[in-house]
Length: 485
Image: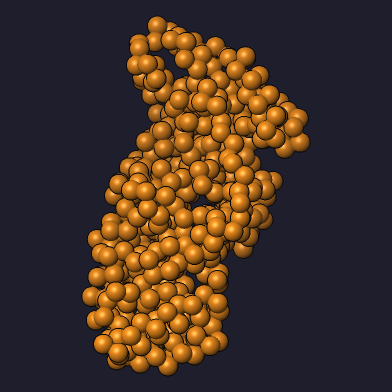
């Protein structure tokens, strides 16, 4: 396997690449609030709604480095091993060869009925049901007067701490060697060493700042949004406090601001806040996706870039891939891929790659014109985004609708040329794409034979990487059988 680099040029405010999926990924996060950090995430094949599996990504690592005073440079390194049927070979191999221990099942009573996450600050509402404080508070702040679980009308909006349940969760976490959920509890935030830091002063300051986000003054809103953007850059603690202070729904409202700077600061703040895993759910709960897509379509280039990066961050949750895909996000991302700045194109490419891991989004991407955009990237004389184009096409190639579109766009001659002259990492993905296109398709096999694919495939079968050898050998075998017919 070979690493294919997708360069994500995120905004300077992003001081770490803490983007992971809590459902299917094993994620290790180093959170020190600095610019330089790395997150490594091992991924298996992603389960689809019909029980099948999509193309799997084995490893994604995000690295951020300060390049100057105006931008960060982030790289998403994707290691992909996909056969022509869309199966992730290395992931399947690991499942066969490694006997994994049974996963720890979290008791249902420990999960918030809204977020379905382990609670850190459980509170009881008037109906007697228990919820995570931040989620039920957002529910009520949005104007809801009923209990989400029972649909009964709430006689009052008092939130009573459930100390017994919190103690039980603490004991359960200790017994199973699970780190307790972090966050704000009684004005304190748990530090990495297990101790607590009082943030009462910070809370008051941030709450005052959040209130200014709703000011009638355009200038005051703009200034407050800029300060929130700066604070959300600096540390996880600030990201927690801004969310706990009710900042996320207000920032979502500011995404539709007619003031360009306010909109840019709002979308970048949401991007920064989304780095903290628990905030992803709050952002989705606030109904942010339609407004983010609107920014992606009509905002300034900086706002569009950061909107694309936000969609990528949020789409790391598998349930969010479905929600984002069902919105109009994919056509807007394809548009940015075609006409955006270099950074915008790379942000769009990374978001599209991640969304297209979900089978249901592949057809949407094809219908949005992604194949023509990818072909343009492959034939661009600068060759600056060949890696990204081939990586996305690798994910799409086994999908029937994408396969038809790839062939119709006369992409095969371009792929054959890359098979001869491309860099080793490009040849790897090119061979995988051609194998997907030619499997059970004699017309495409005959086409690559006429275009002289046998010689470069023979060379790759001898001298390529293990994955390249496997793909090239399989293609040669199909070509041999075709000649015998």
